[in-house]
Image 1 (cartoon, rainbow, N blue to C red):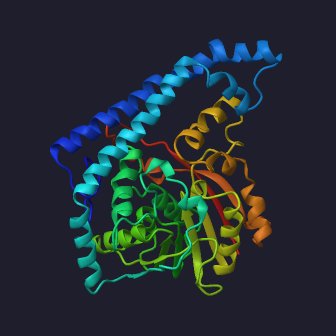
Image 2: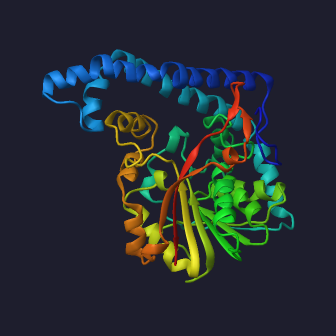
Length: 388
């Protein structure tokens, strides 16, 4: 795919497949950047007035905004096109990945048969929690855990190309912006911190893990995810790129590592894909696994309500919750994460919650989007950091 960094197990693409995805990208860009602003105009011109006329006051919550906007023909059209773009993306990527699934699986298996630098541990008995097993996050067909064949890697290969396409190249050629940003944050704010052992929770196919590995090249890196197809693929991907990571199949709520095993524990873009009940368990597990003086840092989408107090903005950010198979996203935005860290045992004075600019943007990184426009990347990531 145009702009995505190549590695030994990446699905290739034909000319027609590339053209098909170029159309999908153009559609999504048109919907988000050209049509998207029209929703606010429709709200101000029709929705807000209709709500006030019916209720006697302006909308006070995203639910108030939803009561009028979900009936608005412009918003309905925009929403339908936005969802259609997502489904078309997965259809194209699914057919592309599916036609070469066996060939990719063979490359993954060949990598595993070699004397690799990293390791891979699978747990066939692991119970997949319902917040993962019952939901195809981001509408990815089959979700992150489904196995279609023995030693399957389809979910991992599909996620690799899907994450890059979904972000339209915005996280860089390696799709590792959050990992790079977290590493840069430590270098700038704690230059003396040199973790010997690092754990990345909910690693997916290792996009962010490898960004973190580059930031701490001397550290021993461990990473895990719930889905066996994800970590099988992640291990082969890392090996093909010459990176040493010890992957395993585990649940972040309860792992098999001994107490005080790590100097740094991270998760990146995990919280918004897990449940409100699971997040406190994950933070508690971080506290158990950290050595005294060690840090946990979680990075995720910067959409917490405290940063977006306007009811209309909150309503628009709820779109992915209701129409993109991310049902936990809205509830996550309402949670008091520092309070959960304190309850887990982390010292109040060590807890930092902030919006951190993308390391790419701070370095003046300029990217060419999949739709051909070059501009500075100004993304900010939400970060929760605490020291044991």
